[in-house]
Image (cartoon, rainbow, N blue to C red; front, side):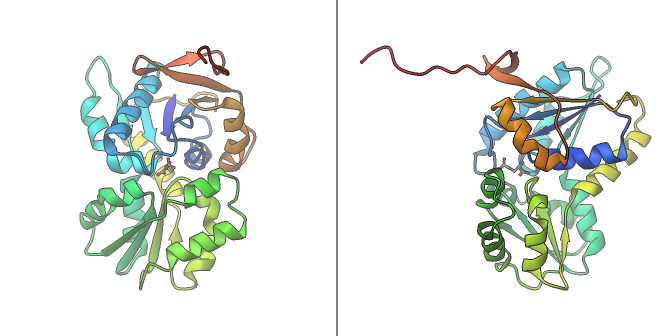
Length: 282
Ligand code: DGL
């Protein structure tokens, strides 16, 4: 079973690609939707949240966790990989999305790569560092903090989304590839393609992430075996909302979503969300 972790629903767009190339594998997806968006949070918080989520997935029985979230991949992956060092008792691995995205960008660009993502993704400069290891390309990053909330609101196909995308895209000059370094942006692909115009390729990294995972599994047998193509879902937010929003990202109906919540620093299963209204003291 392969664990896939994202700050919320967006990583389901990555999961969709992973399931397309690995249809017989079982997946368990954890969306930290109750604490999303991560993109404007400080890195300490992202490190704490990501530890809890990855630990939950290991406890669910995963040996391999794919961090689908660009913000977590850029800010916390190195920390997570050091914190959960694989050993004989726990042969586990955590992989991210930044390197496959950087490789695809370098393969497609002849000179100047644009990267658009959350404030924390761009502020981390991780993309520039990874691209610099692969080629002499120029890299320009711009944060687009409004875009993920617009998509979460279900407004991807509206003029508000198109105007916001155009406004952010106008900040880039002379790029030939624009990397969509946020799990939410594939839902804005038509708006991006229109905004960049001809001559600039808009790159959705998720198919490349999927291909690299297949390649990785071939080189690292034993981390997961093909199963029955089962999908399990966990989220920290409202499971019903997750199911409704998630369908847009996964491109199909979602199975039952289980609720998990933070209890003493770890994520535990809860039968239902707690709802407490009113007050005791007046
Ligand atoms: N999953 C996040 C990412 O790919 C986007 C949403 C958020 O800010 O949490 O960066």
